[in-house]
Image (cartoon, rainbow, N blue to C red; front, side):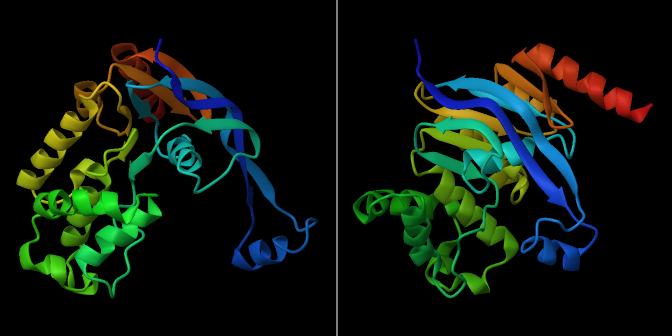
Length: 246
């Protein structure tokens, strides 16, 4: 029986919504400032086992991004408990964490350290990351000189090559030109083909999700509406989309 590597237990994430930035600032100091509350994630529970590949579906505002932020500890639940067991690599904000004055090579070490890798391990992975990014001599130039595409290439290469236990992908496969996108898809397939790597794949493309995942979780207005096999999840998600169009 595979161990659980991600578990949400009755998780709610509640945000305070203010009329404008001024009242939001005052609201940080005084509780009685008028505001509305919204549950971005509302009493959600699920378990993901080691080695599973799970697609997370939902329209914009369904709670997908909030779930990812809580898994990666960018945000924390208002209520409930979250368990994450293993090294997480998140292909979300690919260029976050870069120091623009550092070279690409220096940023490999910086991001590796942020992800908790010792320098000895980063050194072993350095050439693999450089080769995959394929930005040639720019690897030793300051990142401020990079195009947005070059930054994304380097960010993707770092995150996908650090040998994660849990890989989170959020529409990151749209990065770069077609040749590089295909290279990224092949790499993700290579990573998740390893039985001990867990994939959480967030996308609006049901066909791409089906190529990676056997299970799907459907979110709608902060609540979990379905959790089961990928075909049934896609069918449920399609019904939500069609209902919205009416």
